[in-house]
Image 1 (cartoon, rainbow, N blue to C red):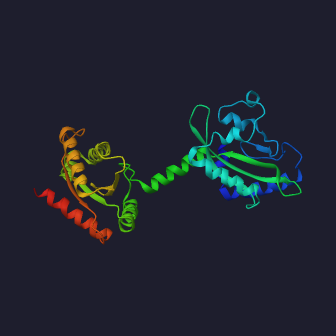
Image 2 (cartoon, one colour):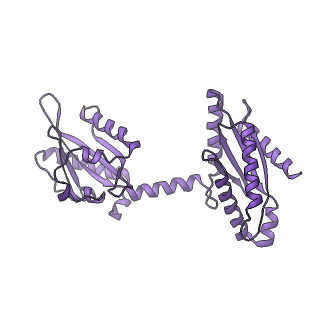
Image 3 (cartoon, one colour):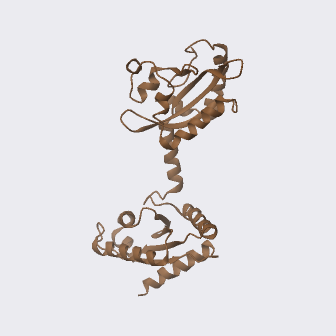
Length: 309
């Protein structure tokens, strides 16, 4: 990918594309447009009635195909490689433009490489010729490979949502998820439980071995928790060595079973540098009508009581 493109904002790309569209309208009969920086994968043209697609060879090469090997293709060559979760959205976007309901076909989607992995494309085009009845005859547009910028976007989202040390979700995401679970309980009567835990004598571990070892203990603790929990359960760091597990669609009995399973794992699995650690845990099913603070305080008290045993 042209790294220079990553310095442009989406609005700057759209502004350039609008300039290109004016040129497209002036050159309807050409199969290519000679405009500087016409998109890092080049232009495409679709003869709609004949279902013939003309495109820059780089567009095909990026997903593992040589243009001369695939020869003349139709629109379905590319649409057949769309990610299943993107297919309907892309096709609906195209239909909306073909019928004149939108000014342009504009969409981001994942497309499968020949070797089976997906790349991200940003595609924008317009109908440049219609017949006397308004039916589309030709479309032209440009396409960008935005895979690297998507990876960066995902990293930024991850940084905003996750604890950088343990990779557990952060406190802000905990409150957001609890709001969602309370909504599901209130309006759809779906139960959930909340589990809180910390590492016993964690301050002593830090004082004895140092904070770097303390960090390793937290990292390995969450790794063990994630191996023990169910796939649907979500791990959150609340602060320090305090963590929560949100257990969707879970009643008290099943939550207690998970506690027992986690405790067994920690009894059998030592942590590097310090050996075996013990977790204090509190868990409870949500009671209808509780606020988030009331639920957290109640589970916190249960965890504190477990330390006294």
